[in-house]
Length: 160
Image 1 (spheres, one colour):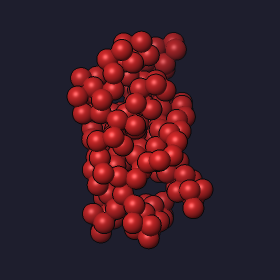
Image 2 (cartoon, rainbow, N blue to C red):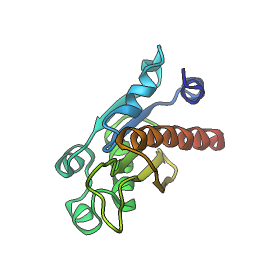
Image 3 (cartoon, helix red, strand yellow):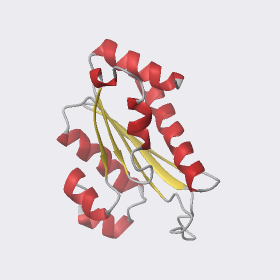
Image 4 (cartoon, rainbow, N blue to C red):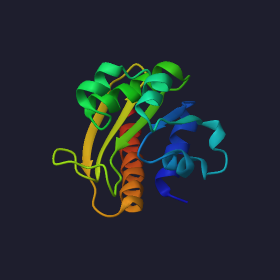
C-alpha cells in the first residue's frame, strides 16, 4: 500500500474530513489508488472522470468560455475543475488533474506529458501547478497520480 495513501487516510479520518477527485488524463487512477485502501469510504466521497470538455462543463461547472479561451489543459481549467467539484460535493478537499498523456494530442505549447494538478480546500485556497512528465502514456499517468498524492499530503500537513 502506498504510504501517501495511508497518511492521507489517517489525516482525513482523524479530522473528520472528506475528499473528492476530478480526473481527466488519469481516467480514474487517482480514485482507484485511494480506494485500494480498505476503509476508504470513511474519508473518500467521490471521483469524477471528466474526460471530455462537455463533461467538464456538465459535471464540474467549468465555463465553456474557459475551455475555449484556455483549453482543457490549462491552469484556469484545472482550477475550475477543483472548485466546481468543491461546490458540488460535500467534501473538505478536492484534487483535479487534466493533461496530455499521449502518445498524441500534444503541441509545441503543450507537449505530451503536460499535466496540471490543482488542490482546493473548502474555506481555503486553490493551488495549481503544471508538470512535464516524460515517458509513455502509462508512465505519464502514473507520475501524475504520484504527484497529485504528494501535493495532497503536503497540503494536509500544512493545513494543521
